[in-house]
Length: 483
Image (cartoon, rainbow, N blue to C red; front, side):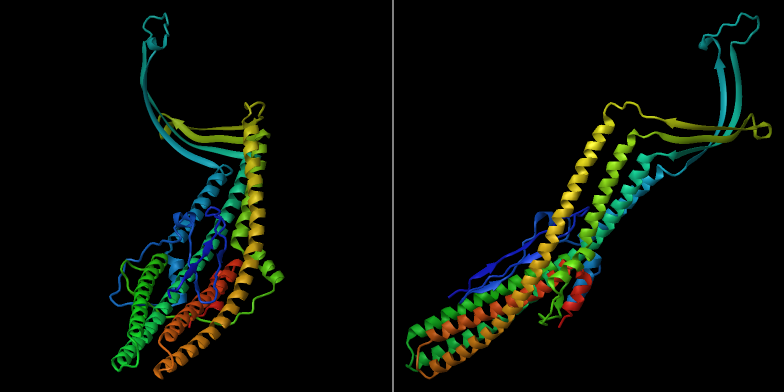
């Protein structure tokens, strides 16, 4: 009998700048006689933003590196490509803020000029009827050294734009923090899945040994004439089936290690060893009301969405302010003359009031566009608020269900192993054929797979809860200490 595996896990994300990053929702399904496991489906948007990749280290160690759960998290927070790109987005937002601020700051320019000229009067159309009056003036020269100042004294449009840029910078900073939370979530999941695959390899190896023992015993009993040939054939089929499963498990484990290596940025071709086993500690989560309060206060994606909504509101005000009068000041002060010794100081100061009268509908168009962006930002904020509520409730449900699954799976493993022991004893005593033993082996394999999957789901649920509460970076260190 082959083991049927049901795999389902959906990673749902929404990015701001790198949009607010949502929760990873895990679902496990199991039934009597079947095993359940969990895997990850990552949307293209996450892959495109680099969270499944990294900037690999350049130093390659000849010895395999020991990597613990927390080591993997720390490496991911340093090398993950999505996080590095998010940091660059924050830098770009800082530049945009300075660009808007520059419109409000004085603009001072120094300029020096040494001018030599010779001018043709006739080319300019000047005909002076005086005998001997020259047709060409020059050559002559002059020196002009001057400083120019431009200053916007009052421009409500510029002021509101600068405030909007400041909120956008704040949103980018929150998005960077949320990107760190996502890296913890993805890295934690990848490590937990890797150790789950390692456990499957160990289980498959044990099952091969058990099947080999059954096959050897069947061969001996057939030679002794106390067992029919069909028992030997049945045991051989079971052995080869377990060998095939071991090959698949080892291959899946190797590929999962590669995926983890890509996420945390190990050097290309670097061998490493997973030092942690799947930990299991009971966790008493906070109440639903307390969890929601923490989430709304701490979730970086929610704070980023709030800042984006405020930025959109200020941009809307800036668009309306295009109708307001502006007051600008400009001036210059310098020294001009034939040479520095014969120069004279000069200056110029002017204040300008500009009153918009008709701009061909440009202001109206800007207001409409800003209004649309504001409505979208508010809609996204409300949607995210509902998503956070869903994330918290789902994480609590997953954690409680996974905890119960682990308890049941542990008991099932014990019962299945006892059944296998009794079936082997009955076969050895000649009470029954080895069909009962093969069926017991299938039950043991299914029970171990259920236990591995439930343990993985329980630990992932802890990471999900920490992420849902907006405390993934510190929460995983508290919930999953590594064992």
